[in-house]
Image (cartoon, rainbow, N blue to C red; front, side, top):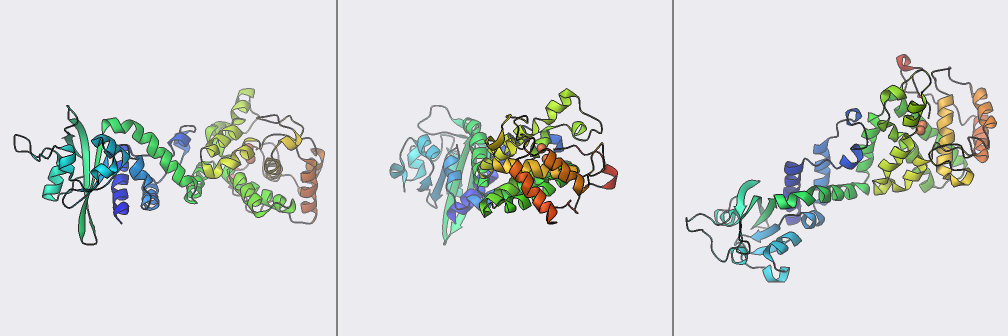
Length: 391
Ligand SMILES: [Fe+2]
Ligand SMILES: [Fe+2]
């Protein structure tokens, strides 16, 4: 309970001071204007919930965090607070804060409170980010700092949570907190919601394409006998395989005619950017190589790694085929959707060239028994048909 309320206070400060965007490292790589607005309030709320019973935010907080009881005696203190007081926890536990840092004095010679901390204790008052000078007997110069306190009532007792934030702590603040947010969400399904928003930021064709590729890939994967874990990885990687297209300009993605070599190069960065994005999140880390290599070709002439045969991760090979299947069965700038018979021919022709021969067999078998067929849920609106780029 105590931790819970303290955590809420710390998050408020994070929010107030930094307008923390945990997606910053991610969004730096991509065109911001194409991203949906992430709901930072919602994210913040989730972060508070998640860290309510977690000491890490208290420990990671680069400014001093103290919990005092009604008399002003120390109940808990983080590393930064201990460093500030120059003592270990056993030396400060149950000691009056005024004795520890203010040399037992409460007021200065003008009869003002020496510190807002003392004032808070004496007046039982709550402040949020009040600018003041925090001084201790250990320091010759007072530090301008913002102090926040929260009066916490628990089991009939009153505690004061005191948080000191100064410009010295601001530097490491951003990075540490971002790292923690990132780490927290890496293990949580909430991140999928946020990735879903990134997918939503993709153009309508790419979005529909990703969903269809995931369906086709799952069919192929099941036929290949992948276990549940493998199928889940395959499905998620397929959904995210073109997420790096957020780094490619919409003009190139939507171009009707052929691409110039330069435009071709820009389009070809998407598997690398996609993989780099996924690598930033523990939960997607394993998917990064799968996404990175979804444009390799079985004969070694693909990109970005020119990997060959079994060097290409199996799940990437499956996505390559599912990807091509979707492109072939959809409208293209230069032709109507292929018939299934034409697709069958193309797959067989490219056996061992673009595609893993074993996968071509699996795909053809699935087509022959009617399981693999063109998606009926094509999301591309009529007016947009013919503007879709491959891959
Ligand atoms: Fe792609
Ligand atoms: Fe694709």
